[in-house]
Image 1: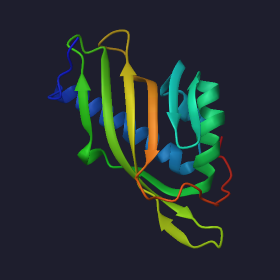
Image 2: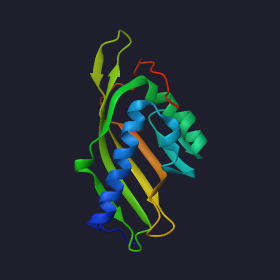
Image 3: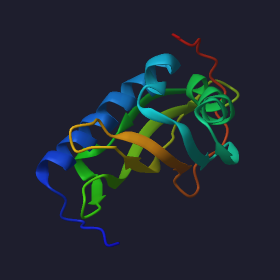
Length: 153
């Protein structure tokens, strides 16, 4: 199966909207509505975890370990890359992001990174769901942030 990096405009717009929906939820430490963007059997790995399967594992082992410790998370969707399968039922979105981390002394630092999300949907009319995530910091970025923000949900 091949992927087209010149994805249909409606798919690019839908995936940009998906990232633009998820980003504010990360920034707000709002787990419950973020879960709706993903398949229950999502897989993922990232800064804080090895490969996990299942939405509960992703939330507990990545999201809840990172989101409360950072501020001002934002996906850079204007530079996003999208690849779509010929049947338009599977896609990949590659997107940079920015955030602010806190050193142990409370001083702030820039905490940029990148995300790859694999998406699937059962029909062309169905919404895209994340089925795999790989989230990582840019090289040289401090791994640990010390903020302790409360979860909204």
